[in-house]
Image (cartoon, rainbow, N blue to C red; front, side, top):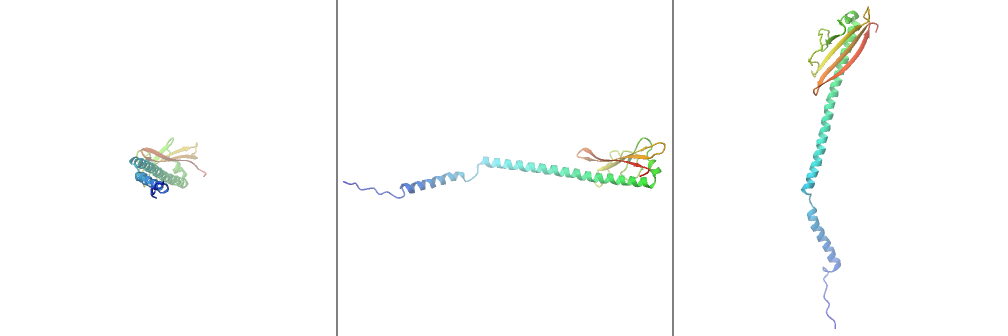
Length: 177
């Protein structure tokens, strides 16, 4: 005797059923994977913040260093200007030029290019623009009985971030140059 066979549904059949099960499982798993967790967002924001803080720090350092170099260039220009002025004074009259040393080295404040201020300028940083520089000259005669060499030590200094920066030029002039 034969029993009637049950009809199998195609949905419950193995090929279709296993495919549907996989799709349903993927949908359920992706439902939880669609966004980022709070911890992941916090880690990302922290890393991004550290990057920007370091970038700002490097940029600040570079800008500060660039300003120091700019001031050094300006100070060098003021020093060269004074050396050229001293060369012209020497060429105009050697005896007047050598008379500016009254002993074993005389100090002049050359914020204005003249021999009127016999001091080291003190804290008068008025040479500029910007008015942050001072220019000090120490002139020393040598040679006996006739002065034939004059040693010149010229210092342009300025305050940068609380410390004094300097550009120093040393030169020797003689009667026959």
